[in-house]
Image (cartoon, rainbow, N blue to C red; front, side):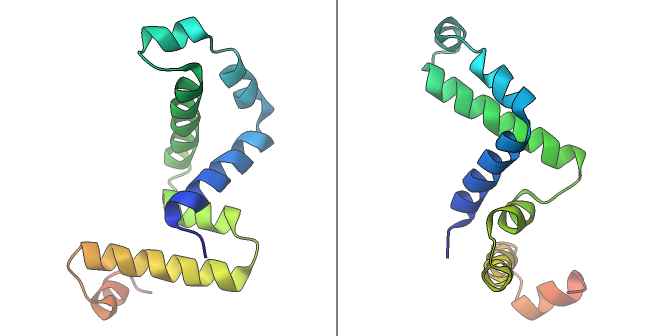
Length: 107
């Protein structure tokens, strides 16, 4: 099973592949644009790709990790396990037991 960050990166790549206009815009960034930001061209393109994907997720009111796991994991059983692991980590970060988290979120 992949990490949440790996799922996010795969999903972002899939999203950009499905939207050639965004990929084209990223391709128009120049080394001069990057230098003005104190970055390499590759770093600037990565930052902008993240911003584009994050803006899409916000617009659609999607949880970035849940959406990314669902998009990036073709095996539904593995996706379900990855989502459960992510939610358990989220519950722990909130200081809640898994049961409390499930009740609160009607899971």
